[in-house]
Length: 303
Image (cartoon, rainbow, N blue to C red; front, side, top):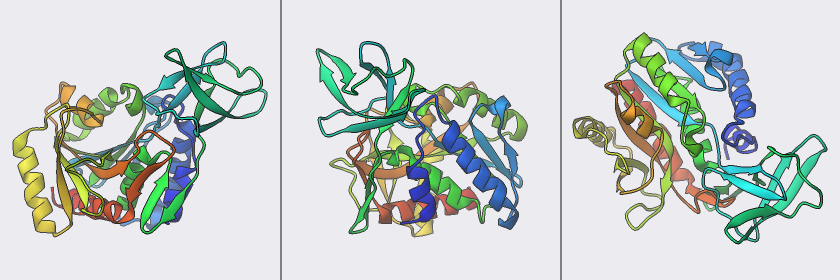
């Protein structure tokens, strides 16, 4: 498995606490950008909270990937409050750290609430995430946080040869969003960006299958503009890269906030299908991930 992908899978970043993954990516970007085809302008720091924007050349298109994951916040009386929509079972281990020390515990549902079984009280407000266990077998990857480490990995793979474009690493997507409005405003008002791609994961369903290529979503709970989708599909066909088409009534991504913004920006979700979403056992095909990376490289160059 790719070293970068393994490294980012082992960094916790529950919604609201994305600083660790943001710092890791920023250090890597600063270290490597001089060797890339185009050295991007970097926008980060307190003004952008934990978000990162990379601006290459004269951009026409922006690609987005959220850095946060699902998890839990410790309440009182051993109760846990979900962040995003984590799935719970008796086999799930959680990890974290408070002022006393490291934490490893299980989550249990009772009377509609979730509780931890750690032998001492955990400091209120502590964030817990799934314990990571990475397994690669038969060209499949199984781990926690594929949502959305696969999107982050895809954008990082673009950096080496990207001439023109904006790459955005966003926060808070799993828990209702929050960073996208000011990010969208920033890229529209400064570069007039009017087209966007959203790099994320989706579900394996009766219509989406492993090893059939990247997933281009025609709609989820929101509907992108068909004229823009038609351009995407025409280019995807011309690329020769395997892909499959998704139509869903539910779910969403950072594309929701793009569509709800006051700016005329077209968008399209392009991602990877996975099983067992929001569990420690998310499963995806490495072949589909490769198709996703290649499709983003082609679209960012030709859109």
